Image 1 (cartoon, rainbow, N blue to C red):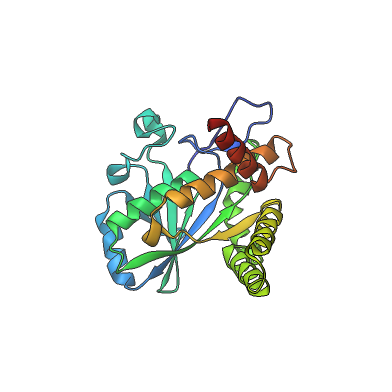
Image 2: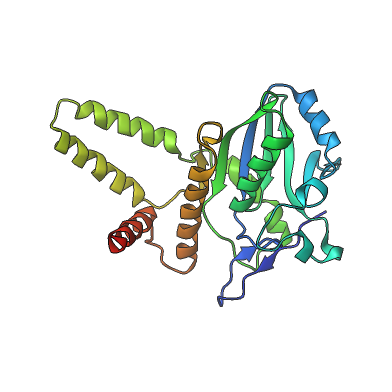
Length: 255
């Protein structure tokens, strides 16, 4: 069972999109599992879950309990002959790690919310997230799509907030005896430098879902998707700093 993908036709070189209308950007959600058998029991009770023995995976299908999830193209708008499509696939890595592969950032958000409701947090919780910070051409073949999961293995050097946090702590340590304005200048200078860097192809992110909800993650993914789209359009120097600068400019105009 393979999800057919479509393209956006607003550009002479359109990026690849899922059949539900999101930009195709692979992502992998890692779950820390405390009770594998109990999680398997939950999967078996969900009518939107189906085991695929060929690939030894649990497929999350766009039907039954999941069909009320709203995408750009929702369940009712998908041709019957194309249903059910695969929203994601779960694979086990040992007894304590469960990986969910999805094909868009929107599906990251929807899946975290959906399975938080269907699987007790005592059984499994989201531990981390890895995302691909680029778009793919509409000419991408099915064979090429099937190999995209290798991105998460090949990019072991994927950067993430842990590195940034460590460097920020070092700045604070270096400037702790300085004047507040000097500390602030050093801090802002570092943030500007980091935000001007091109995002890595594969990036590890925290979700902070259980502490803060999903709003911060939603914003983070939207910013990364915007940068990927600007790069797709040919604006290779566009960075997260440009997004933040535009945001600040808009705030000044609103005042």
